[in-house]
Image (tube, rainbow, N blue to C red; front, side, top):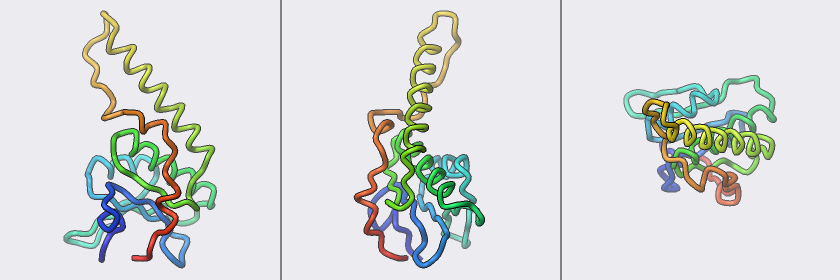
Length: 145
């Protein structure tokens, strides 16, 4: 069993499993696993070494796209190299996450610079990639596992 993130040299890959409706997210970092879980992905394992995430069955294609796009954007906002397959990109989700990341960045900066505020940890590795849309062009040619 191989994972696309290993094959492509990225931190995370989110894609539809070939010939199915299953949306898979594979990654190797425990912090990325937390982001995927927060976006509704369910952890799957084949002991002792294989861990991946999958969206639950029964979601509409629109909801799958929203959750996949949100996960990719949040992973990128935290500094991960994450790709999402072109058929799972939701422009609506990109705009929503972009606004959320900006609000978090602004509120985090305001509270940490306030003289009355206690110590506040900055968000994990937010950078210019946070506002970038997931790169669909590099993910459209996914090969099957």
